[in-house]
Length: 66
Image (tube, rainbow, N blue to C red; front, side):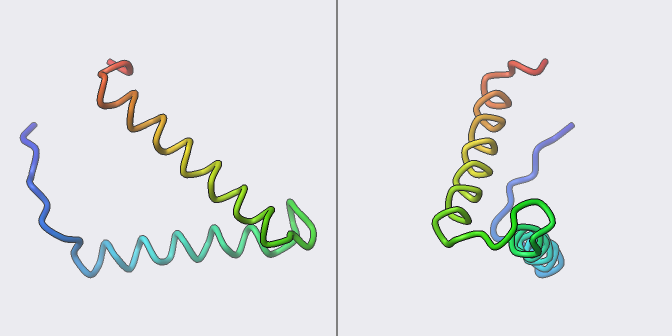
């Protein structure tokens, strides 16, 4: 399969990204998993998600999954 060079994010894709970010924020603040989180706890959650994404990206770049 050919890779496409993406120059910018199309509006539909950006809308989906924003919806996902909103869903994550809603899950963090809804109290279902973590009641009344502080700003510091919210930052920790976001940093953990970012680190997980970086690790997955590194694995993909190194073709570890194949």
